[in-house]
Image (tube, rainbow, N blue to C red; front, side, top):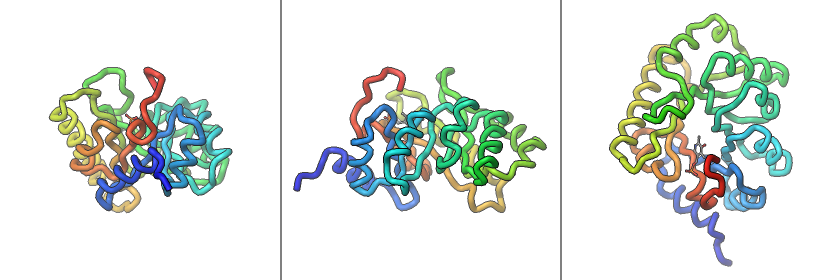
Length: 228
Ligand SMILES: *Cc1c(COP(=O)(O)O)cnc(C)c1O
């Protein structure tokens, strides 16, 4: 039997990852048939950047998929995914976290989240800086939450061919992870995730300690949307 292209891509990428690094297949804009193909090849972690698209795919695909929301999330969209999302990577404000808390409570579940940090030189990318994260973590609002669990940090490097710059940005994110772990989560085994690395830079992210890499086009092929 001929291996499909998606299966071959997955196998190649997975064989290059160390034990500690899990692969999220980023399937945004791709049809469910392609996700099913990846699923049939054994892939269980999928990443989407739009809440409604994730919800629509969740409804028709096998229920043991772990769904990771990786894109900027507006508070009014949390409700579409709160009942099933496995992890939200893009927490960039207390307000958003409060909304996740509220929706988690409604569904009587605890939702795993990552704090997104701005590590790139580009201005357009979302994310917190360390001071903003400290303010969030030290707020009474955060301390009273029972339906969110912070599990680590996420970031996107500058979109550049300068791999030295990319590496230093990933190293910065790892430093932020270690600082927050030490200052706020020293006793929490759950705070252990470092989500960084995409198709063009995940090997560097792995070398810099990534536990989750988010790979799309190297699995499913290029997307047609400029901004997707
Ligand atoms: C689209 C996207 C990815 C995957 O990008 P590829 O270059 O296709 O691998 C990873 N992370 C985020 C946040 C994304 O939006």
